[in-house]
Length: 231
Image (tube, rainbow, N blue to C red):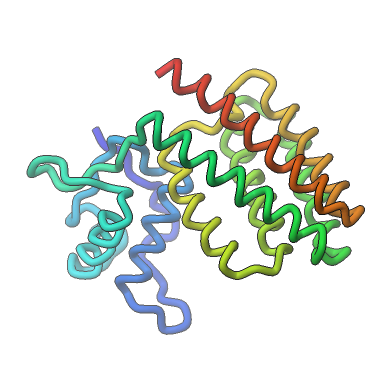
């Protein structure tokens, strides 16, 4: 049976006059990133409309956009299902992620302000604190903090085009399922890698920041492939 996003928040609020179809689209993308929808889950117009308390027209528009981007696909008369990426797509995704995360770290080393570097350290401190919780909480909150860490680096890079591309890449990563933090030892190694990236950014060492960020994503891919082997 298809999982449904938690019903926190209820209906959609259209901040700043945002079109309803756009608001529904953003809500569904956020649900994908939160893991509320996973590969193979069904998305039905009527169910989504009821959950978000909107008509089916903006839902149809939003689902059409998700299909156009390749996040969902027809399910033979059963609505749409969230796509399951094959191994070649996973490798391509991480290849792009390595390039983009490396570029973001290099640019952040050039442009990040002292408060932004402090914010990265704060995120990592929060990550350390959540590491002492149970495995389920670590996977959920750790994944959220990890996204916050990489988003903060991308913002510090001061490049709107890189930022937009990184956000879309995160939507694709959401289709991969469980976080790599479920792999034994990964939270600790990820924290060490993040710490080294922060120090390179703080030292304004763009070369090292890029190298470390790329190595970090290669290690994430290694853990991702471990997870895929178990499926």
